[in-house]
Amino acid sequence: MLSGYNDFQTATIDLSTRFCGLVLKNPVLLASGTCGYGAEIADLIDINALGGIVVKGISLLPRPGNAPPRVIETPSGLLNSIGLENVGLEAFLRTKLPWLRTLDTHVFVNILGDTIEDYAKLAAALSKEAGISGLEVNISCPNVKSGGVAFGTDPVAAAEVTKAVKEVSKHPVIVKLSPNVTDITVIARAVEQAGADAISLINTLSGMAIDIQRRRPVLANIFGGLSGPAIKPVALRMVWQTVRAVSIPVVGIGGITTAADALEFLMAGAKAIQIGTATLINPRAAQDIVQGITVYMEQHDLPDIQALRI
Image 1: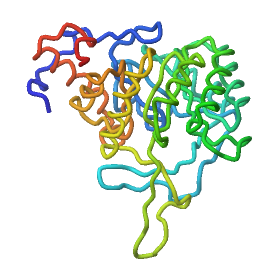
Image 2: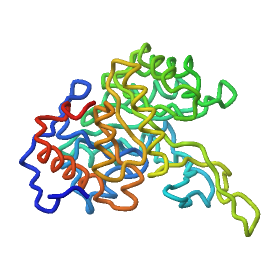
Image 3: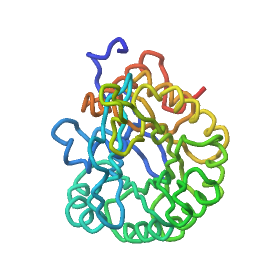
């Protein structure tokens, strides 16, 4: 923990961050998939004290997700195979978005689909709605028209999704990249050239666990996505590479648990960061990180967030 933390006052430092034409209160966002649709965590954290929230991914139709067991703790991490369970677009607009509109911070909606047409339809529908600051496009989904290969592992498919969303969206488009590729910068440049306003990375790493007593995979789906502190070095490396490969803003995600973790990503060049699995350990993690960043900047007499970049 950074010294001076307990005596911290949020008003002493201005952490406001310019991002895709928006002004964030600070560079700390809640990551999609770990904070529900916001209301689920609102009694535990002041969401309005953050730069924004990225809500749980939305598909055109509701999805039940994968069969259990679908979550297991691993050393310094979490494996999940939730399967993108969500309420679907219609229910989101009717039951979730009205509450999100009451927030005094930015709301980003994560979207996902099985086809390029799915993404375009979602983006077009959400563009008609008030109270949304931007879209985060999850391209780690399988492309059902191309044999199930994830959009995010193919630069051509990644660019096609990005272009389709940009053509119909009035909101900034942030493309969330999968780390399960040979060279993250190839995908990053492809989505930038297709019109992405920003990039967020990384999504979860593919992994698995085996129950040695039962001699079978722990997860019903066999494979899952690894998140948490274990993936931070990989995420940080990919953020560093991507920041230097593209000219659009990069949002850092992956194993950020403390203010020190967040500072590493900001120093690597991330314009903002997202807090995911840490929220499941400590619901106040994101708010604590905002405070810790401020203390660090006070201690080092830094004028603004940009001064952190190395």
